[in-house]
Length: 146
Image (cartoon, rainbow, N blue to C red):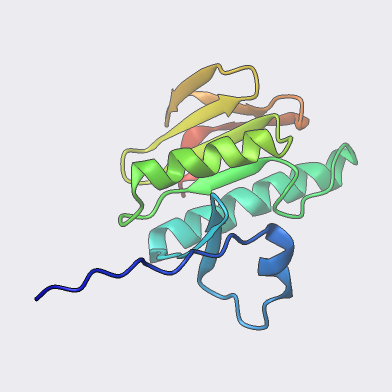
């Protein structure tokens, strides 16, 4: 005999819930669900480089402050699922971010998603800008991938 039972309801979380958690290290919020975030050494290094470059420009111009939230930047890790990345991009845009960069250190390109629905793919030899989030920021994509 097989007994089927209903699965328990999945709790939906908010960004505030995640911020209140004592140990949220390694977790991310996608579509109201907590997911374990697996990052690689490479993606962590690239994310830090991007944050440093953006913060330097913001400090120089005073046009913005960098908290990791002025411009949404998602650096891909080898284990990231494209479905999850797309969900996060949509959440960033729905939350009011005008621009979302999805940085792929392996393929060495950046996909720029905008609130108006346009998407631009830039390769390492092309220039990326902060657009409206940080207008004075301009770098070759390769500089982000160092």
